[in-house]
Image (tube, rainbow, N blue to C red; front, side, top):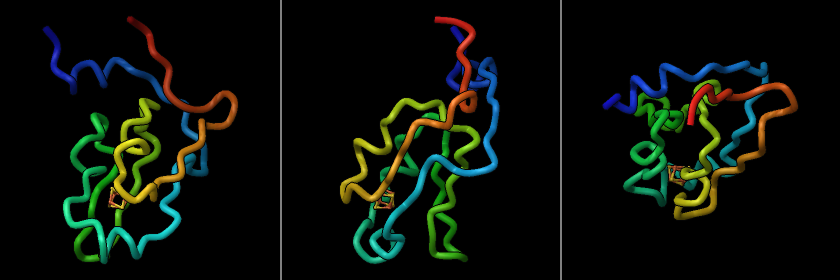
Length: 94
Ligand code: SF4
């Protein structure tokens, strides 16, 4: 059986130059969200807390469009739109 990383490696992406994911209020991430679940639940590790910058850095290019982070952000602080037409992930299997 393949690992998650191996399965992610089978995907292809056509990346847009602009992110389809935004964090409307970055202060909430700093002041209210202690556990930062977006950094733990995303299987593609799109969300990364960078302590030196005190912010979530979004690697939108790796988004597999599962929607988990948006649903599980306790402060509804992730604005996620589908990638523009023609951009985003392509699944080859399953
Ligand atoms: S889960 Fe939501 S509020 Fe918490 S760090 Fe991530 S984006 Fe910010």
